[in-house]
Figure 1 (cartoon, helix red, strand yellow):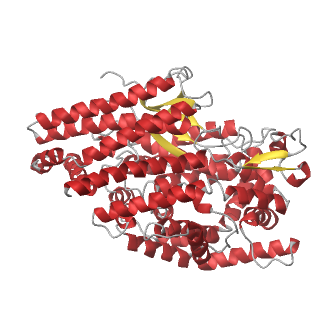
Figure 2 (cartoon, rainbow, N blue to C red; figure 1 turned 90 degrees about the vertical axis):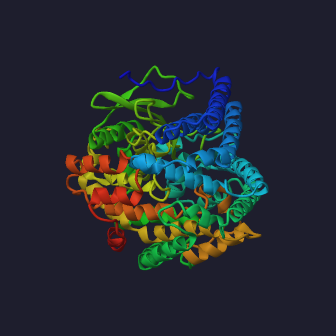
Figure 3 (cartoon, rainbow, N blue to C red; figure 1 turned 180 degrees about the horizontal axis):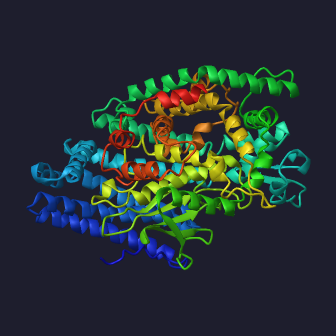
Length: 638
């Protein structure tokens, strides 16, 4: 068999033309394949499905390029061209989803001779056709097509406003008391005598964690909670109205019901019940730990009767330092970015039986991007691109993007990790985030040996996709594993006793953090259940009901809540996945996280199958039983 080659990416000078040509080329190939499919469909059911698969391969390949370059390319012209290309691809996909001729060919197939994966591929195709509106009247189908295009444009604008809506504060040096020296060195005083600090993660997170000046923390909090305000308030209202109409036209009561139908959870009512269950389970822990925070705040501000966002992270850090003997400024000295990145590759390579080989001569979209080939038993099985530092115009959060889906004997899986870490020392929370997001990348590559493109990589139900990544976070908390890469400038390894204290300190606040997550989940759900005239008022109401921390006046959190785009009504999935992640992790021996038998079984039973089975079946295959709430409940109660 001829070795599969990764994509060849363009130079900066070639990128604008290449993105347009490659994306449009994929679109035209898909059009031609559809024309051929309808005019002379294969007779054999398996051949029909392979032809249908080829159409989706062409579209997915083009969409991978458009998605990555729209979020990552340094040139605004290239990003804009990629967004426009995605609009054309999405419009064609919508048109294809309502093509009655294609639907007739697929629905007429006799599945009796198909194997399990092929039958599943056919079932999913027919389901998706019906969810696209193929069986609706012509007028409805026309409106659904229009809605799909409008939804995409609103989603792109929502993301763009966040990506390009960076805010900043400018303060005198004395207003930055408590900040780490390396952070101060990276933020020199300007000609006006002030230090400028942006809302980008490497600037803002250390500031709200370490700065002892309450006014500075408040100033930053106000800017962070007002990113993309007021622009995204109007955009979000429009997007929510479009989704609601879309769901009604397909016969669903709400968008949340439409969206949940193809997830593990099943319907919107079950989401609400799950949110309430977690809220109740976390109540005692949240109240207990919040009381500790408030008591510590009152030592500095005796008049305080509550604690809110500007003080939350700072006083959480103080409590961990004073009561748990964990000083995050000391902890971060063990986590220099370069060592952490290499340590991550070494740890996951050993755990999953793979290797990462740098590809120094590969062309990428920016000099910061680090490409690696992924090898298993000496054979290349994929390529990954690590784009881990912030820059203007780039995606502002942390996520994995598919550049290309993997197909058995046809093409390698290629994935991109976009994050926004600084280049020096990292907070341990950032190390955990890096492990988490890298888990998605591993899933994409290991799950990329599929016959059917819709099952390639991270292709399970959406409310399971976070579980493998959340479980991988556990390896960033193990003393023996951290000892392999976490060393300070003097070369001293992070002490096991310190890691043990870090774990105990991390348990502080997990109850109120769960309640905050349920506030986000409730906001995500409720905005998709009915129309609201004032979205900020909804934020206030739901924060009061679900979070234990009060609303900060004159802020508009929803405008920068990027998950309202990609996750729509499904933010609950983070906690749903965590319940499953805790259960899966119970199969590992905490004293031997590299156990080859368990790790190999997890890799082969959960990650390698991609989306070829239901998530519940994947978990049961690994655990030998259905998943339960027990491990999560025990963890929350610790």
